[in-house]
Length: 158
Image (cartoon, helix red, strand yellow):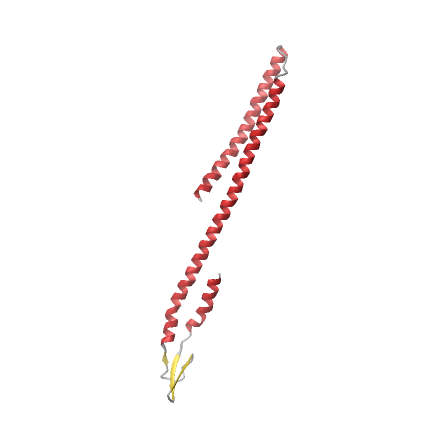
């Protein structure tokens, strides 16, 4: 932004022409012609020729600013994605722990089953519960892992 302001400030006097006037043997320079035979000096031509250089400097400054903004945007996006990946990894670990805790509770009840017909029916019910809990949590864990893989792939593209 500083460069753009400097370029604009220095570009303002570029359009002025300097006239060389000679009166009574004295040479003077002015922005307005002092006589009909006043000459445009080299200073004017240099200033006019310098205008494209100033424009190039302005364009370069704008390109550099744009590149800097792109790098900052990319860094912010990477940081946000890293935070999201870390959060999802913690979530997946918690889900695995919750699944294992629920299965352990059911298995603990299974150890107290009496070996008779009612006990066998109850044990089959507990096995069904273990299967249901495993299916439920594995589905949640798989969804979290898929989201993690997508984020990691997107992160690697940056």
